[in-house]
Amino acid sequence: MIPTVINNSILIVYQALHYLRDGMTTHDAVRESVRVRVRPILMSTTMVPILLALFTKSPKKPLAGLLSASFGFAGVVIFYPVVQYYGVHNAQFGTYIWDFEISGNPVSIWQEYCIFFTMPLSLIGYFLGNAVGRKPPRIQPVGVDE
Image 1: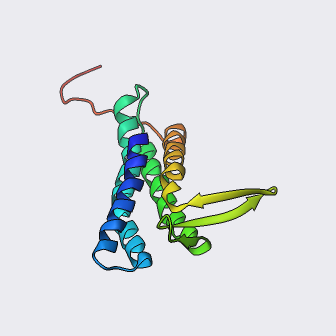
Image 2: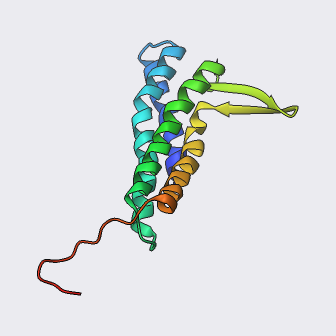
């Protein structure tokens, strides 16, 4: 998943540079490139439950996939507007950066960090769904007795 994270931020910057060359203002170019790239980020976030379902040997529960995708989607939908609202647009990097302090230590959160927050949320949803969900019903072939 790390190559996906790196690729998303590179493509956002590349798309913004393309829009700048076409004559857009920096703010509009960044806003449009993020708008265009949000869908692939959402798609890569929802890939977590699919990959976990394919590569884990434990029994899968339907609630695990639903919660995993829902938690990841909610993370993206909440993270982007919050960073854009509280953050300041940085023209040098072409993104929104939210600066604040925790216990006197400065913290900067960039809008591109979204994938770092949504992947763990998606994993939490997967494991929570597997823990509390019920097993899917076992389908018995017709005419077969146990």
